[in-house]
Image (tube, rainbow, N blue to C red; front, side):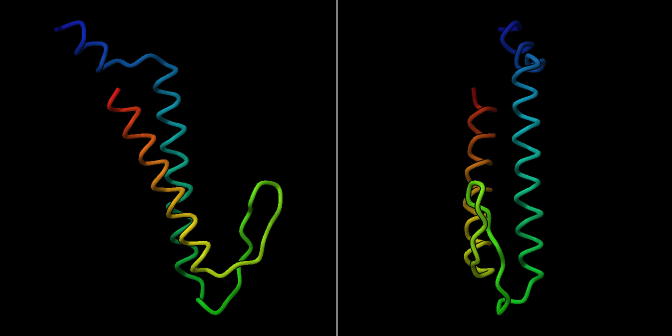
Length: 82
């Protein structure tokens, strides 16, 4: 039991690196949502899809970023639960 808890406290470096990458990804999406929230809803924005940029509304771009944020949070939660 003690060995299991000590390994939980000190994760291996690859797990810690993966967790840090996901946390950075979450922060990027949170900043993008905040920036999109400061733009007038009547303005058009460009949203990247792969290597291409498409013109869209702030509402659609915010919804897409929110979905990406939710997916990243789910990944982090799954990583922490294992």
